[in-house]
Image 1 (spheres, one colour):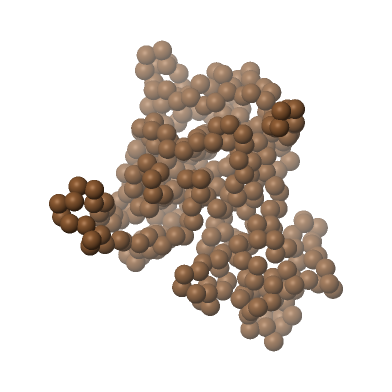
Image 2 (cartoon, one colour; image 1 turned 90 degrees about the vertical axis):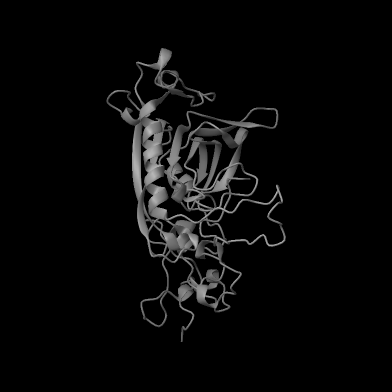
Length: 333
């Protein structure tokens, strides 16, 4: 799927020396731009979209069941001139709906740059329908069952899954998408339809607006139709998710492998210095987190079992008492 991507992929500058200057098919080199410069432009473009567009919120106010409306954007003109803009949506003027934001600090080094920049980027999440199962929400470490549609701010569609639900690990997609899905609750289901398909009812519906620094920045997937430095919109329907997903099967829920607690699992790689240059396995995708040759699943056992506290969190043994759990301590004595 085009949506899938590794958040910490190294940006490579490819020299097309074999193409002559007069080759009309030669790829166009895209000069590097500062993260701060692009981010300011992205924020202005997203704010302009949110303030000049609305959506079909009337369709959601009385909708229920397994065939909820899809979000449709429209400009605040013509018949829609008197509607509420996306920027002004809140639970006071439209009960049950809101536009929420979350800010993330992103470093240019995440994209292979060495200029030392760190920039705060804002993610905007439109909640048209929250979802009915209120006991919990997915985390960035969970597998989620959803339907999505990706577009540029100009309305160009670049990717979609609009038929049967698809399964994504929310840390194996671009950062803005995974973190945006965390704001929705799942629906009821699944129910068998008798024809080999399944359905859900009263699921979460919304849209995620992200600057390029929370998307693909300078390196969108080849052939995706996404230009470099593009802000993105994803419409999503969240049907279900797998609480405490253990992506690598090492006995630790993936969300507990966020060692630095920054909401990003892809920058937690305990044995990075000992991995080959061509390998990068973040802890949630690594069955031997410290690279000592002993599987993580074995190193987290206490009295031969995986033990958890009253909150359901895995308890980690620290045999040598140095403050580093055994499964992250490759100099354990």
